[in-house]
Length: 323
Image (tube, rainbow, N blue to C red):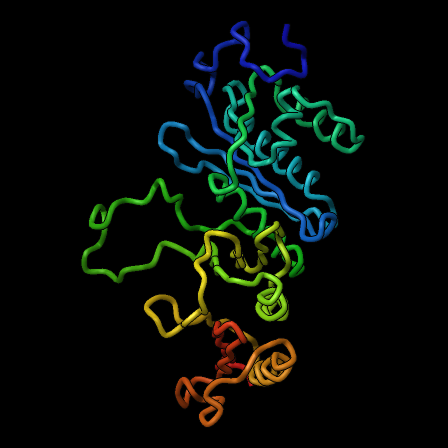
């Protein structure tokens, strides 16, 4: 028999399709939630959204910075936010929670015991927000939880910058019309996508950490995740990945071949570009185009072009409006 902490849909629970004073209720809402901690414990934030299961459209989303906390606390915070959002939309519908945290999904499903006192409190709060008979939990891989992951990183970026997180006004991808549909043919084309992340395959992870990882952190990206054959750094709503392993073909990197030539980063004022370029020399980077530096990209383009020992190139661009 399912106890009060269970999450299986109970047939005895009033149907979410019954009429309410405010109109017909929804049968189901999908909550996607995530949380992250840069340091674990470290600067932490959560992201949550509610999705219409029929159209795939994001109905509402929320993110928040919670200060210094563990990854588990951040993930539970995302769950609390998601359940609250869904309950505010419809206090009678059933809820399917999708998360890439195996810990939260298994604990809230009643299959894993909750031993840590902080986790017990957070799980109790979740069950008080929404009757547990209305909720089912499903684990999903990280690549299918990108929207909630994006929100949690936005929250951490905002919190570490000392500002409040603000939702972006761009529409949900599921709500975008196809090219040519409902569009002003004579108007300008506006890019609807933003860069989610960049993944760089390398032969030697330790060498790449020493040069590229060092540079990423000097540019404001913070360590995000680390695993046997890779590592990632996050900042400003995106993240960078260095990946080694058996799938990487042998042989040197050659940036002049077809494909991506180099990465270019905004690096602050001209003085900051100069300082970073000098310091990079002690971390495996060599200045390119010395005879034309710092205007190798043109007289109006102040930048430093660097190459590391593995042949990867980066461009550090100075803000034209800053001296």
